[in-house]
Amino acid sequence: MKRILTIQDISCFGKCSLTVALPLLSAMGIETVILPTAVLSTHTLFKGFTCRDLSDQLMPITDHWKQEGITFDAIYTGYLGTEEEIDTAIGIIESFRREDTLVFVDPAMGDNGKLYPAFNEHYARKNADLCAVADIADPNITEAAFLTGIPYREIYPEEYIRELLLTLADLGTKTPILTGVSLNEGKTGAMGYDTGKKEFFHYQNDRVPVSYHGTGDIFSSVLAGAFVLGIDRTEALKTAADYTALTIAETLKNPGNPWYGVDFEETIPFLIHSLNEIRK
Ligand code: PXL
Image (cartoon, rainbow, N blue to C red):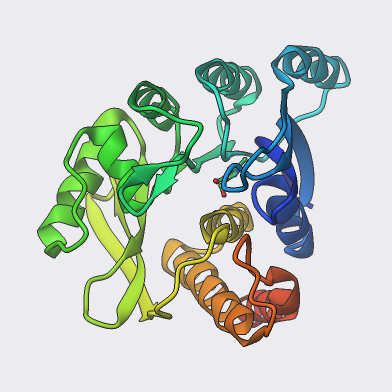
């Protein structure tokens, strides 16, 4: 069984970061080791959230893993919270990385042209150091704009996406993948650039015209898992994008319509089914 380490916060309520990554990666048949960087009462889009930083725990925890000889096939970072956490995550990657370890970075810090409430532009630029050590980094367009300094655009030609991808590649990411990319009216998906093969690749599906919190974490968790399972990049993009789109569509049907996160629990059987189809 493949083993992944995921480093991100745990928001006790709100369906994001570790409360999404752990169930999804486990459901995909991957042993999932967690390193919570902070404990929050809710995610930061709620008012009055509490936050206990766990920075001082990270080195003792990973030192213990070293003593036990624990290794990882992949390391996946998500929302980190402070610049110090970014440095710590880079240190952990350097310490645990082996030749074949996949390093997947989701520089979760904003959406719709804005940074999340806890962040500023300095933090955003610091995330570029983390992307520099990534095999795969999957920012959305907002995050890519803050990482590269290229102004954010809501409406864009494909050339803009290619420019963002090439600039992310210049930061050091081997395969940058931009999420929330719409190449045609009514469509949405992701586009990537493979620096080894010097090739762009993309996957688009029908756009569900709503925006839900936590969908970036769902997409990243499934995409990271698919790469860890050795699924090829186009099929991996399709698996993550189709699962995310279906989950949004299912959430819309829920009369309670939770604003704070999507009903990914409902669609886990579909995810498992699509992985079984790929394996056939
Ligand atoms: O979904 C990204 C995320 C993760 N963790 C925390 C957040 C957010 C987005 O707002 O606040 C704590």
